[in-house]
Amino acid sequence: MTASSPVSTTTAPSLTPVALPRRDLTVPLWLALAIAAVATVILYIFFLPLQSTYLGQLLLNRGWTQPVAVFFAWTVLVFTILKAIALFQQAPSLRQIWISANYPFTSMRDILQLQQVLAQRRTLLPNRCARVLGAFLSSGQREIAVEAAAEDSGSAAAATDASYTIPRVLVWAIPLLGFIGTVVGISQAVSGFSSFLETAQDVNQIKEGIGGVTTGLAVAFDTTLVALVLSVLVMIPMVIVERWENKLLLQIDTYINDQLLPRLPVTNTPAGVDRATLQEVIQETIRTELPTEERLEQLLDNLNQLARAVVRDRQQFVATLEERRQQSIEQFERLVTQIQHSQGELLAHVNQEQTAIAQELRQQSQYIAQLLAESDRTLQQRLQLLETLSQALQALADTGNLQLLLDSLNHTLQNLQPVLRQLAQPRRVTLVEQPSSLDGGDRPI
View 1: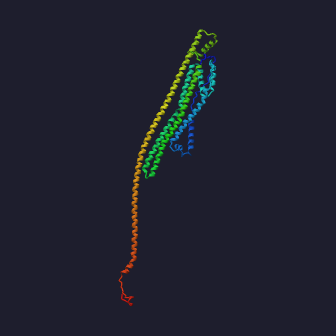
View 2 (view 1 turned 45 degrees about the vertical axis):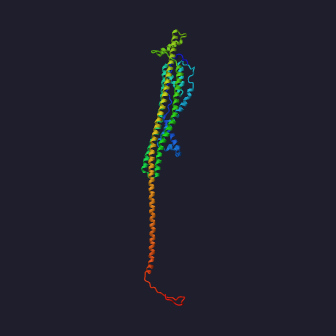
């Protein structure tokens, strides 16, 4: 691309650029929080009839950390969606031709007309181009326009990075809520197990106590599970959208440095020369038909200055681009390192918790087995006692039958006493002789 000729400033005093504020792609955080709160309430209302399902149990019966984690996840997700919508609206502006290849940059009036046209657009790329042209129109120096472009680029990058601060904090807070839920669940399980051991009397109470322990452990592990799943689901889209926004800003910087800045005219304004003197010199140059050798050398000097400026700007752009690339790579590497470190800590923490819980359960199982063995021995002793009591009761029953027999004998003896008394009285026996049938007469008896 070739640079244009030195700019004509004959009408410069009447040219006033349009003042434009900086535009960025910030998303109102209050809007994301409001939408996330409504979405969380709707989600929990939807799962109220489904409380008996697995997802309903995870969301409704696992402590206070679950709603907070879901709210944070909705906030990050809504923020990411709003960012993606804003980026999608900016994408068509990168495919449009805002400055034609044959547009003249020979006069300030042409540049002002271009700046006014670009200022009417509401997308980010025309706004950045209009601000660069405004800086050039206000100063008349190409170096000021380059500095304004670099300043706008740095401001946009800083605003983008700052807009992701709260979502990053929320993404890191979601696993922490899962850890808090794990601690709360394990604490409930241990305290419940200790309390039911103090009051356990039979096997049914032991079973109920073990059910309470398993409920506490379910709270511990389910809160961590939900928190980790939510953090992964919201972190990946956020990172993708953030990379997309950085790519958009880089394309805008590339467009300004390739399509706009090299085409701005270079004004040769030495220090101490005022605008009136410069206009007079330019008018004299225009009135001259055939330039002298000195003027040709001056033109060559201007061309050399322009070439050096283009080379310097190109080097500055390449250096800035490389610095941005290095920063993006470092940020991504830091993010990956933080994720790996967090996952390692999480796995180590979960392994420690699982080991401690397994040891505690093993000890408690052994203690329960001892209790069951003692209960079995107690039951055997009680069964033996019951058999002894049964034998004693049988003996008592036999004793009661003997008493009845004695009473019957006593009653019989009482009934026989009159007969015995009659038999005990003295009796008189009379012998009577009767005749035998052979003798035909009586015989004394």
